[in-house]
Amino acid sequence: MKKLTPDPPAIFDDTKPRRYMALTSNDCSIPALLIDTEAPLDVLHEAAAHRIRAAIQLLENIASDANLHSNPALLQDFAQLCVIPLRDGCDLLDVLGRRLQEQLLT
Image 1 (cartoon, rainbow, N blue to C red):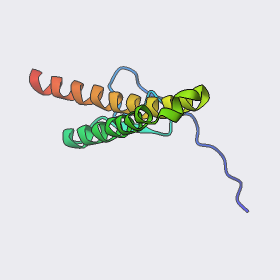
Image 2: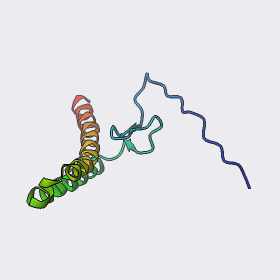
Image 3: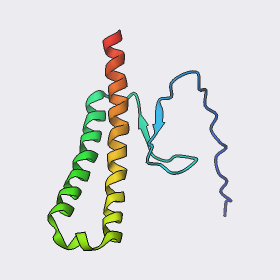
Image 4: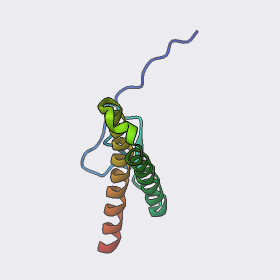
C-alpha cells in the first residue's frame, strides 16, 4: 500500500491579491474552505444570500420556540450554528464589495 504524505506548505506572494481567500470562519492554519475571489458577481451574491438566509431561518425558529430559552447550552450551540454561515456570508459580501468597487474605479 502506498504511503500518503501531506502536500508541502503553500508559499504565497503577499504583493499581489490571491484568487482564493480563506473563509474567516475557518479555525485552521491550512484552510480547506475558500472563496474564489474571481467568481462571477451573481455567484458570490447568491452564495452570500443563501448563507445569510439559512442563519435567519434558524434564528427565527429559535425565537419562536419558548422551550429553547430555558436551556443556555442549547442556545449557545444554536448561536454557534448561526455564526458560521453569517461570517461566511459577510466574507462573500466583502469580496463582492471589493469587486464592485474595482469596477467603479475602472
